[in-house]
Length: 419
Image 1 (cartoon, rainbow, N blue to C red):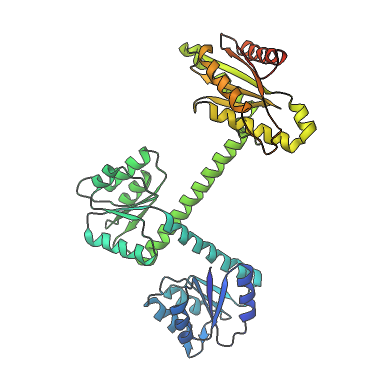
Image 2 (cartoon, rainbow, N blue to C red; image 1 turned 30 degrees about the vertical axis):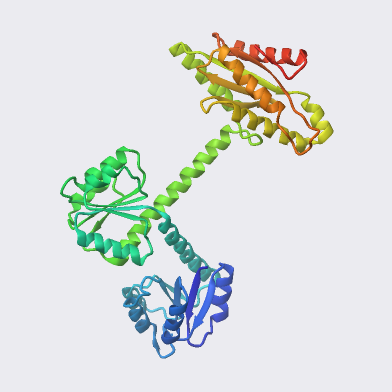
């Protein structure tokens, strides 16, 4: 649960902030001053502190200053005030507050701002699930980074004292922090090797060298960022978050793209390829056969008496039959074979590098699997008829031949594969 601690002496805005917290699904806790706030901090995990300028028994300036020197320094602080002077803002931002919100702001504006921090907290949670590699031959610098990670509860980290040790590990990580000057191999060479391998991971160079040309070169070869030593704790985490946010967004876009591409070629009911894609793959097999002289075969399959199944049991049962037949086909073929729903209750299976003789056991395996399939309705039994043919120079002739053989199987009594 995301928890917001609200500090305000008179609690004039308690109802407003409490209502906003309910809307963004955050837990609300109120305190009137610093002493009460510290007691709450000892008992509760606070994700965000929202404070007025003046507090009971002191000012927010003193409270934030003491907070910065405490174990709670990583908690973001937002000042919620009616004072809108440049001096006040400068003074607070210099203390390291995260935001400055005016009490005269519309409730929706305040809600949007607080919701952003909740999203940021979700980013912090996701950061903990990532894998990290730190490569630095300085034991002291490794310890500094380890302390920063530990304070942010990031524990899935491997530490390397040389670049070669990382490369020889064979491991892949979501985030790399690599020292620029290493004894065995320079950090930029490691970044280049990562990018050459196709890695899209966050790859940050860390270095005591603060030269514009060096930084520019490192970024140009594919580094995600460049962090200078000695590290500023807050800047280190902020830059790390920025890069990880972009990385996670890229991963989400990539996953959605893959999902959309899969949807474009998949029959939604059966999960097999759709007709358009099965024909595209058929053309690819023809090109391979013509170029390399390879063989391939085709099986056309049709569910027997499917119309009567729909009429007797309903279309929902008919859909389940189609799904079961598709699964039987999937389980009966190799991973390199290509199966699709040709249309209605018809299916097509392409067998690369297989002559007609090798097609017979596959087609029979599918037929028997469908014949023995069981359904919740015990009276329901399904069979399929099919035709199998080998490619001999014409894609149109191949499909026509397999289709004709399939209809001959139906004419000869069904539950048969014709060759």
